Image (cartoon, rainbow, N blue to C red; front, side):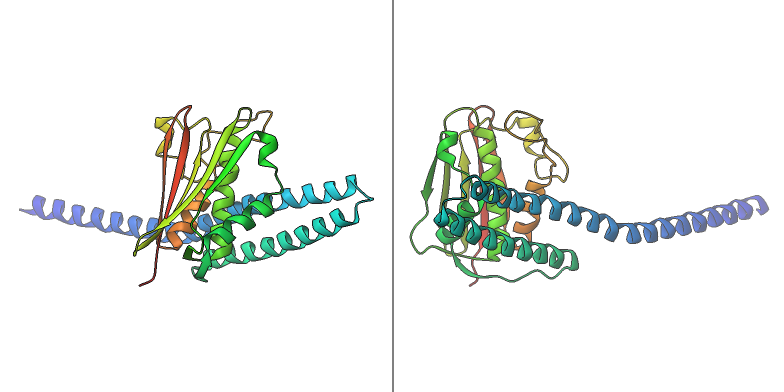
Length: 257
């Protein structure tokens, strides 16, 4: 009997130790999680700033190459000011995300959103032998944080462009709606995504890009950012792709009732 009581006491003592260790680990995780989240947000901010600063550099170089063209100077200054304002706003939105309060949604015309994204990019898709097709009904609106959704579209468009560089291609932006949802699709005819990678493309820091003559190594943050923003909108983002035949990214955003 004494031996049984001693074993029970020993087991009880071990359980208490395990509970204390578990509580200590949980406390450590609670302290680490905000830091990890902050690190991810910081990396996303750097990624998105690069997307905006690259066109600013292009506009500045274009202006310097044509010192005699006053109209071009005026246009590049206007574009630079517009993109600088966007950079400030997206930085603030990302900081809001880190704080957990980011909802600044309103009704916005989809066509206006898309036109402004292409205006910000400072890239001539025709020179890349890419045909841009917009299938967006006039007046179609989406309930969103316009700055954040534009940044999502910018990431998807830039990815589509990279996937098609080096050969003729078509980039299609399509929009539609139901009483419950607004749907946006970004469709390319590029290199596509391998099936084994399709489930991982939205994971932070996962990338299939490698250095090439067309671009730099990917950071694996663009699509993670897209998913984060769409989920903040209480929507969804998914990808369909076939290697060598192109990809379709579909955004579904709820419409307030």
